Image (cartoon, rainbow, N blue to C red):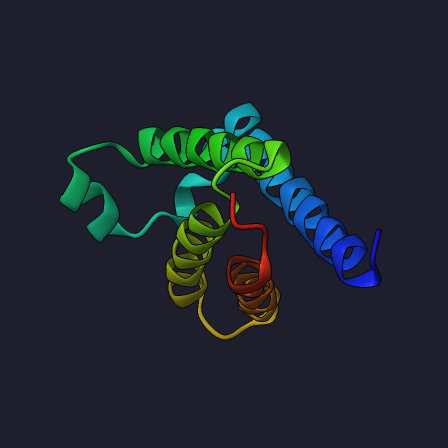
Amino acid sequence: MTQERIGLLLLRFGLVAVYVYFGISQLIDAGSWTGLIPVWASSLSGLSALTVVYANGVFELVFAGLLALGLWVRPVSFILALHLAVITYIVGFNSVGARDFGLTLATLSHGLLGERR
């Protein structure tokens, strides 16, 4: 196995760990996440903030699972990167936003370099 392959696997499973952690966290304690949901997200979807959090948690777990299984790696990474870019924009420029920006770029990089399956 080449260093490039090992690096991509480490990146993929590191991202999987992050998305699984946050997906589970949202499902276990959705109430503590509702304050982060912008009003427009509830208005646009017609869903309560709590339902948006649950849906987001399920989305992140499903897509993390696809990454973990190595299925549709590039498109899944691009979708997750776009998803996290929106979250980063909503959070704004602070310590959380800076972290999310880095994770967005890591996820985008994985989409550009990841496996073609």
